[in-house]
Length: 383
Ligand code: HEM
Image (cartoon, rainbow, N blue to C red; front, side, top):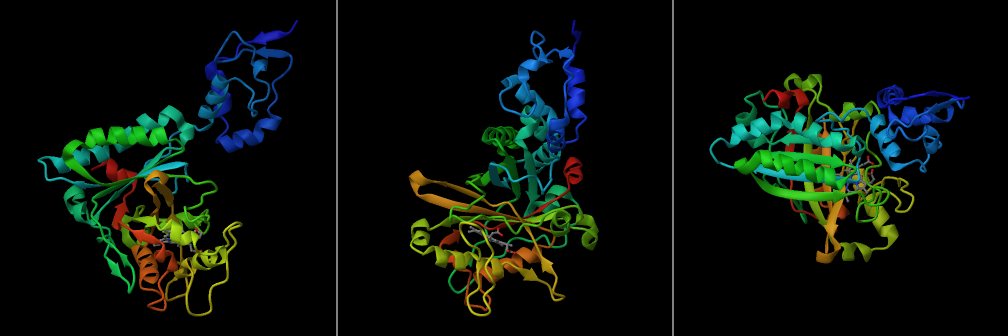
């Protein structure tokens, strides 16, 4: 007779949780054998033997089991202010300004210091949805809100007037970059956040972005390829010893662009590829032009006087509404050195050489432009 042992939810959960990450867990799956001599009971439905679920890593097992295994595999929420949080299917970019209502600053401080709890409330409801929120604080509100030394490069976005195109500067005291695999999770977090902020803020801009196929922008190109990876991420994004009072934080620049898609579609694919600096279908980098008109990719490759290249981390998202003819890209760049993004913008709008601006701008118009500093989570907790 087969021996029968009861696997309780907690012992079963512990086994699964002992795998550090879902990737580690799934890589162990082929070797994860259930002894055939034992009949384990399903931890979530004690009436069923666990054999009803067949293999762990295939779809056919029942939905309750699937969701429990997946939930267990993502053990904890993503910490607040993780600027390197995953690229997700959905994101909300919320820019707000403080009102002059009595107690507005205190209300904002209290909401920001409670953000960690708010994030937990929402993210626990589906840990696999990879919820993350990063808050950026603008230059104008920094002193009033924090009473702390200013990050050395924190300044308002300054308008850049090229011969043909202008990078406009628009207001904004706070940015909430809300990311998740699930639109409803972004929505719920923003809803609870707005309840807490009440009339202490007014909304300057709220843009809902979505993943478009293989991370393409609405111009049809894969966007984000040249982002740094591995140790280059903190190296490019996090302020370090150069500014001890701001270390662990990051500067953020956002710009909301709308595209002239009919105009863009009138160009041949080769012309579009020359403008971007990559091929459209298979995303292969093209050589830099020796002289004359430079591509978007080349204009955004920044070197300092010592020849060191400086990367930024972009998490751009398409947004829009075909019904109202709106097609856009929400640009968001995280950087350790604000001057790097400022230099990119100057090269795009003024051109290099001056006069030869980034031709992406002939089809993309910035409606906003705002700079923030994203402090480490510990700073927000102690506001
Ligand atoms: C209309 C808005 C924009 C669109 C649709 C767009 C799209 C793209 C695409 C398709 C690429 C090539 C693939 C890649 O490496 O990601 C790219 C590269 C890049 N873009 Fe943009 N971009 C926009 C605005 C900006 C702005 C405003 C900046 C900086 C201020 C910027 C900085 C960069 C950088 C740093 C690269 C990588 C360059 C390299 O290869 O080293 N982009 N962008």
